[in-house]
Image (cartoon, rainbow, N blue to C red; front, side, top):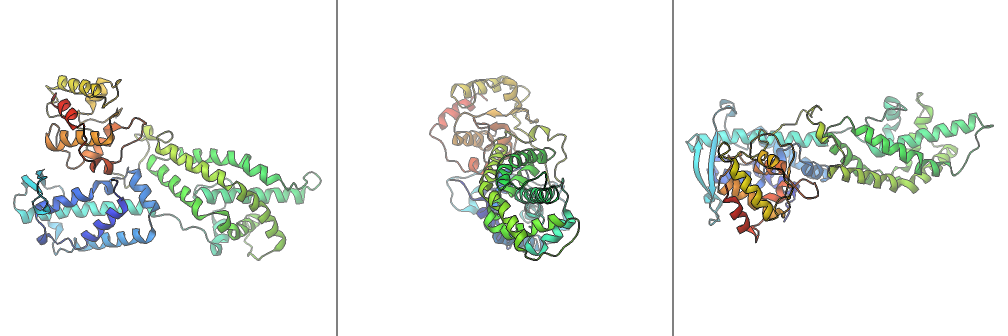
Length: 453
């Protein structure tokens, strides 16, 4: 069952407000990380989380931010001076899970911890946890901060302060579309008025223009707009734009367009808008044709966003040379590190062959690419997992958590998994889905394959 990330985040925000350390033991603190899957919220590359935040109710997001702000301000309601502890000080823990125990306070068997003193360990835990809370808040605010949508009262200011016939960089797609329609409406009317001997008003002109030339310009403009952006920025821009098609429908925006047309007509001069039957009638004539073809632009935008999510467009291959957002923090773990990496390369060959025989990875998997997954180095080509998601989940849990055949990734094993393995259709796995899968009926096949290591 898929977890609702926003509900999960909402619940976490309520917990952190009053997370008094004296009421928690080490096992319970570990459980907070594992239960809420904190890395889902701190990962700036998670398109799933980005989309959920952008589509969430504003009131809920504001409530969540308020809770986290309070937690950061009060150290989760603990009267502790965390400045005396450094984030760079030695802080580590290893544990195993006791699945037979239901009580969270006894769910984890601590094998090693540093500092050894529980009270001191809790203080360092809180230091690191507050840092994660700050990252969560920063990630959310980087997504929701955007210019206010132009409204009727400020439409004149918006046009005169920002209006450039060839500049749409500060607008989302529907605002850009409205502006392009207004520009063409003004230019067409002026041509008919000023060059009446050459131009004869054609009542079907905008029907042809909007569904033809404007549609082509619109599509080309999207690709030109996203070309210099990195994938984080592309996802944000396209998601917000697709959402704008829901809020800026022709029915809701008719009155606003009258003012946009008026201010476009008089640009660069500032003229107060007063209802004018002649001008408004012409504007609504244009708007009628825009309304008839609005669905074309909406569907095109949705399809481009889907293509991006499928990896068909975007700048994933250019990420090394494109500057990333300031909030971006790259994980230090790029792949798994096999504990016998120096002497056990033949074991990895056996594992690959076994997984292929059991139809869990693609039959054409290259040995070099497969070994890279267990090298601790950056992944160039992910392995195609042909089994189902529950089998991959079990494979990683056994490999990393239970058998400990790879080095401990400090709860980053699922982030590394989606970096190393992809689905047959080329899409990335959802970390939350991976983490919450049940043991598959084919678990014995995976156990047999892992015996090669």
